[in-house]
Image 1 (tube, one colour):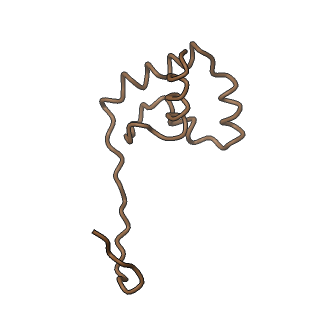
Image 2 (cartoon, helix red, strand yellow):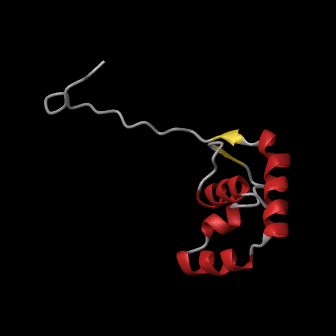
Image 3 (tube, one colour):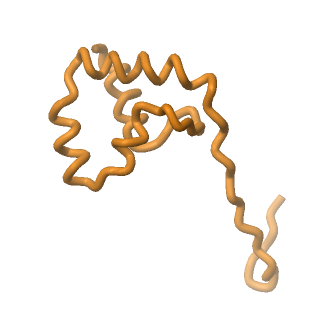
Length: 84
């Protein structure tokens, strides 16, 4: 795999770079693991498995739903200045 594919893969391991979510995401199980389990999983990933994960992501990402942004509304304007 090329360096750019490895960077994309590492980004997808921690959070979807497309800001989307899907039940069939090949990275969802990895994201649910703790740090030690993630480290063990990363040791098993080679070029062929990395290519398979990226191919699975590319095939299902068009069926993903955008992740909803939960914006925090600030009611107290005494201590905050509204810029805009």
